[in-house]
Image (cartoon, rainbow, N blue to C red; front, side):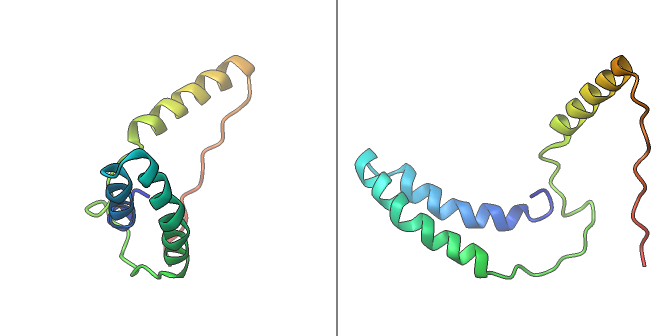
Length: 92
């Protein structure tokens, strides 16, 4: 999601706007009609491949990732489980 953020924003924006500005009963009907259509469109779409680089990446989950790692480190220290470093994938 951090890499393909523009695709997710473009996919979700029309759907959100259609249901947000409509009255409650009508928005539920729009949701029931549009959700399967948008789901099928997202399954059949083929977004262009872009090179993974930091200039296209939007770090949405940086804080939650950091917090989760800190929590796991604390649990690891308390439980006595040894940590292993994750190996970086090699580039071909």
